[in-house]
Length: 481
Image (cartoon, rainbow, N blue to C red):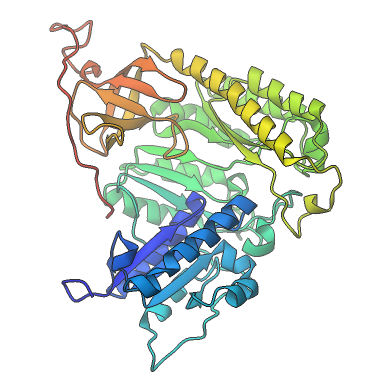
């Protein structure tokens, strides 16, 4: 036990931000049970691994992590090893047989069951397998939750599951169909987070554009966004995982007007997955390449200066050299701000797994490297165009590259997945949104001058204009709260 007499617990969260929200719910459950969170697994009496089971590389990472942490049952203080999340939801019986080291298995809808696991003892044991089937959990703002990172930025999950049937994706088979949270429940959570000091909210789900269509009465993403940007303490709202279908007029209008006011970040995450008509059809995406380009043109015409993130899959069965070249052409010409590249993963139970035309791994790797090389040049050119501009930047804290530098993100940079702004010549506190002038750029990152803020008399056109000050600050990173 810890010095305060509390039992100790250690969490590892793998995979996407949606998984992180689930982990934060379990963190809240452990708080309610009186456990103390520790950073080192060797100090923990309970270790919880929240796994990802989306693609083969993520599954392997989860398995490796479980075995790595299992050693603390012999070499440390660990009394209970708990495996939760998508991997155990998808492969519960196999894992139970192959991993005797694991004491309890929870699925992707079983976050609240951790409370019973923590209370269980030798006299009152629980069944080892606690995976609910089907997955039917929908997070509510009344559920316990503790942020795992700095309090100024948070992810908010607005729905569970997915009702689409893309050929390569197994998520609906183990996460279930889409289940949206009621809009008033989301608003209540965001309001509570903002009251506690959160200034940036990132909305996530598997299919955010479809939010609310399954509710009765029916709701919409536009309705939810309108309610959220009305909250006085919210500074930035960002939207993730918008399926590239036609945006309704109300949401486009909100993006245009709210982005101008600074409340709704001019940022859209739209996973296109490919750019060839043949591949989009094989992937069962429900749109073609022309629709993609029309979508981009429409968004940029209505929301000037919008930042766009997308993701592509290379090496899907049947992808020819011509298909890949069409994808490269889209990346060369569409001026996308952020691009993620996934290597195709052969997932059992999916339609893609039954298709012919498998692409060799070495070809997949070569295509992934080539696509990222193209995007790196695009990103470098676009960031160079920001030099000299003034941007609002959310300060995050010390740089991990130097304790003498601060880092932050402008509205077009999402947490963890995009580049950052390295801040010089001034002081600032984590959670502040400061006006800075961009002075340098690299492939993915920027440098911003804090001394040239909008209200700073030392700005070049100000009355006290001088050379930039050399003083830099050293600030602690804001801890979890």
